[in-house]
Length: 193
Image: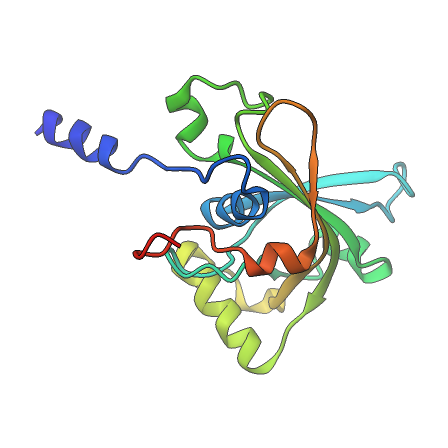
């Protein structure tokens, strides 16, 4: 049984896109990560006006169905959401260190080879069919959310991306426009495209 589990673990290894395909790497990282660190500008003493980072569960779609749009499930009771109500500008950081990939490769989380992305933009509440999709995307990867207290007035939001920063290799960070990011596919199609 142990050999079977080890074999299955090896079969699940992530295959990251080549580092020359920067937009694909960014989409890949965004789809693999289930959580992100979001930095806001604090509205709370004693750190008012300073960057404030917090962890949030995210999903850009159910596994294998990437949209590239990070969706969030939020409540105004949360301190960072209170910051966003004053200034919706934020940044999201995600890293393959959040998966088994970097550990399997022997990469330190800070190593440029342990790919990570920083998304700049703003957080926007979504409604209607987009909220329905956000619910599907989030609850498929974070089923515990379905049991969270209803009296907390949860709502669905998306991270509206204005810039993408990628560090996936030595030589410095690379920038990707939102257009390049959304046009890229995180995984190659069966026909090799």
